[in-house]
Image (cartoon, rainbow, N blue to C red; front, top):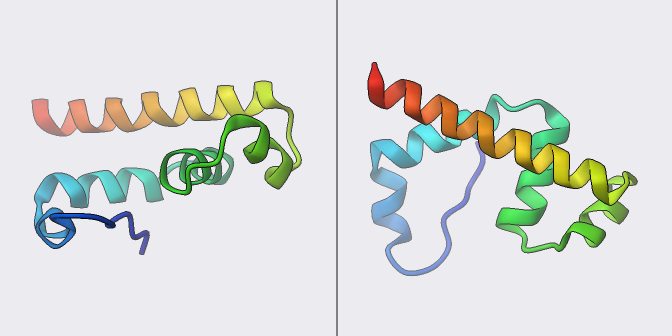
Length: 82
């Protein structure tokens, strides 16, 4: 399972239903989107570094990250509305 819990309050965050929904949403992303999201948002890589690691152009990094964020937001909106 994906772990995104560092810093103060990490144990409490691990227990929240929202945290669990976010983790599930990230795990369901297509592999390319998930890899970009993790490298940028979790590991702190910039777009150029992420492109180098994944051997893709920066434009693809930006597109994958945008799609990943939209998918997660949509998933969380759907859960909140349902």
